[in-house]
Amino acid sequence: MAVTAYAKARERGSEALRRALLDTASRLLVKEGPQALTMRRVAAAAGCSTTVLYTTFGGKHGLADGLYREGFARFAKRLAAVPSDTDPLTRLIALGEAYRDNARENPTYYRVMFGGAMPGFVPSEEALVQAAATLQALIDQVQVCMDAGILVPGDPQVVAEVLWAATHGAVSLELAGFFPDEQTAHERFRTLTTGAGLMFVKGAGA
Image (spheres, rainbow, N blue to C red):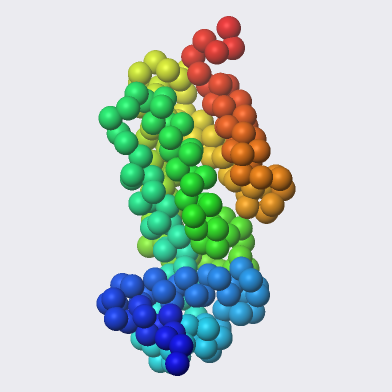
């Protein structure tokens, strides 16, 4: 008799169970569309009862919010793993690489976070705060680079948003399969993000 994802996760504890249920829901959502995000459908795919889902998430909106928050929790963990004892510009570049790495490691969550996989979904206040913290990490590092005289003085949020847009564009095209292989995708990513960054590097345009 096959052991379900639910049964395996339950043995590891409540947090593992929650993540297993979210993983199942995220895969269904990307594979079959938002119509698959029902408590009954997710429960069947996970091999558990709907009662387990309601107990864990409270309902469909709680499940959707859980998907959104889990995606940003994984992203935040990946950003936090970037070494802080490097020079400011190296760390800024590494944060961009971490964005790409996280998206490649968690493609279904990336689509939940940034790809509009759940039409009409409105994140909770707590979820929005959690999401904003990841952008703030980039804003803070841009400010560090400005303070170090590496980037031209200005509004760090504006610079961070431009860098994010370049990073997001390259990563989204990669996940959508527009590049023939991983090496090409990485090269395009570096070309685009470097070009965007050079706009703000002090003396680069001289």
